[in-house]
Length: 344
Image 1 (cartoon, rainbow, N blue to C red):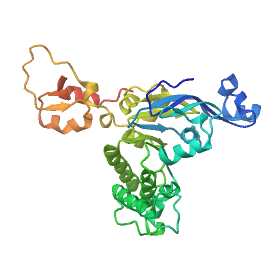
Image 2 (image 1 turned 90 degrees about the horizontal axis):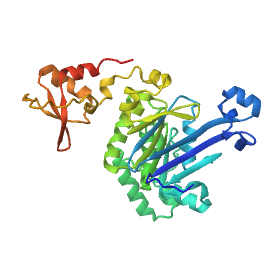
Image 3 (image 1 turned 120 degrees about the vertical axis):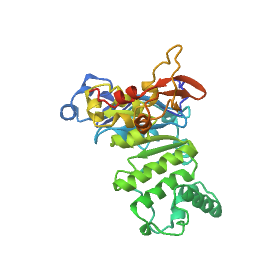
């Protein structure tokens, strides 16, 4: 199939089946059998089932699901750590499955970097040398790569730590080193396989904030794997909910919380405070013709509803909703309060 999408990463009908003669399972009724039944009947396990998606340049695309849902297997097929049993994977329009070993190595060294849950740092190398490892593999001059490494360490909040060794750093700091190592090659695409799941909650939140700040400046294309819905909602421009190897729903955080595709997604999102996810755009009302109301302020349409609660507690005047320079409607106290009511 010719790739026509302008996406930075595209998957088309991707499957991953483990076991003998795995390709015979693809697209058959057997593929829909419960895992234990399929294993008993065929000796195969289906990890990823007919998954297709596009990720735009600069987008943070989060894949979330429980253990065994297939999310880590999926992300590892994007750079062919695992080869798909069937389907197509495109990176910047190039068919990864058609690449020879040299072409694949070039893509891994220059276009895609990966951050894992386990840091994998070299204990006898300095932090700067760890960060510069990918540049060393590329054959860059030692001084150039160490200079780059120290610059990237500054970007992830580890300025001045380049001469230290991994055992001198906390777990959170080591994960920052892993992030810096991924950034040092200046890749277009960053893959994250549950990188923060082993960290303490406070450190984890700090790393999430660090990622958001970096993305604001660097605008990389990111595909992030997690089993934590709160993390997915915080980081993702779009979220794919995965179950039994399939995508159950793909949408913005607001869409997933406000309009779950089925009971499985609804159960996932039932405890999410709606006001922390819904935007003002979703509750905007038209301004009536001839309306002479006095507005308290203008509010951007992408403002999270939670941010308006204090303002409407202090004033009952409505606010105009703007999208850039355009006035798109209004929002009042009643609409904000209604948005806080659970609809399930």
